Length: 130
Picture 1 (cartoon, rainbow, N blue to C red):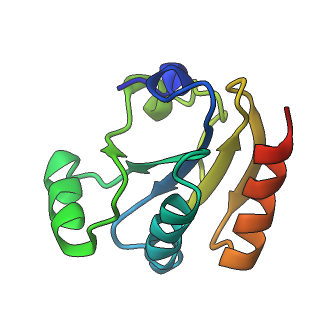
Picture 2 (cartoon, rainbow, N blue to C red; picture 1 turned 135 degrees about the vertical axis):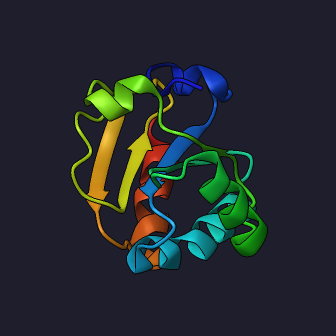
């Protein structure tokens, strides 16, 4: 799946939260259950996708999914992400969290762990934006 076409993979009515992570980064792992909670609480309005940057690719993501059961789809990075040609620019640090508006534009981007209270405020503000 291409990140350039990320927004087309989800309904236009949804805000999309993209979590770029590795299976070994503690702040990224801390974010996983909170993203699952966000999805459960705002399922009608929000989609979540994780993009795993582990060198082991699909093997690492399969193991990660079995262990952590995130409840949202996990994607491998496409060639554009690896080359730095993405809607987000080049990802140099993980974890990264991006919030895409209903129109597919990147509204907000963060490096590191985002506490749930802050995450829900940001997402709710984007949901209210029409």
